[in-house]
Length: 198
Image 1 (cartoon, rainbow, N blue to C red):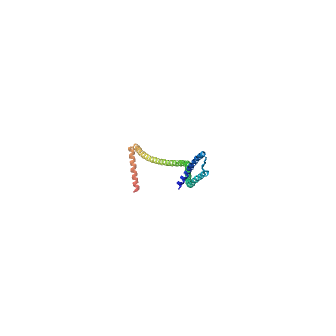
Image 2 (image 1 turned 90 degrees about the horizontal axis):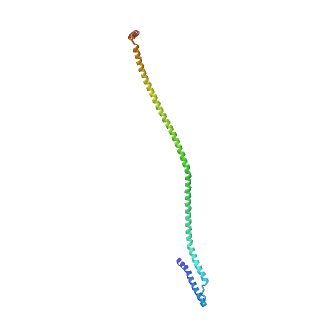
């Protein structure tokens, strides 16, 4: 039905033109013969109204759904574009926040590393002092022990030397007459002690 109406609308101006050509031919012939067959003005207006009405009907019937669907598509695309724009803005804001926080995070990491290094340095100093104190105490103990051993060896050596010197002195002073004297004195002491005990 639509197709037939469209063909009719498209062919109407053609028929009108043919009629106009015939009318023009008749006019020229009538000028020659004296008769006038001009196309009436009403027929031209009717042709125009039919063509305009048909076009208006087709436009109103098809344009409304077309423009509605096109409007819905455009609105859907605008909604999607707004959503993408909002997502992009949110991502940009998140990235900007991360970038601004990055400086403070880096400073916090630096401060944390500095604090840990200072604490580790303090711990190493304390551990070093403890090890040095332990080594010093061990060395002092070893020195004290070695000193005692040396003193004991020195005392033993001095005692042996004193005994040797005393023996040498005694040998030099002990003459045979002194030996007899000592022996007689010893015998007398023995005898007197025996008398006391009886």
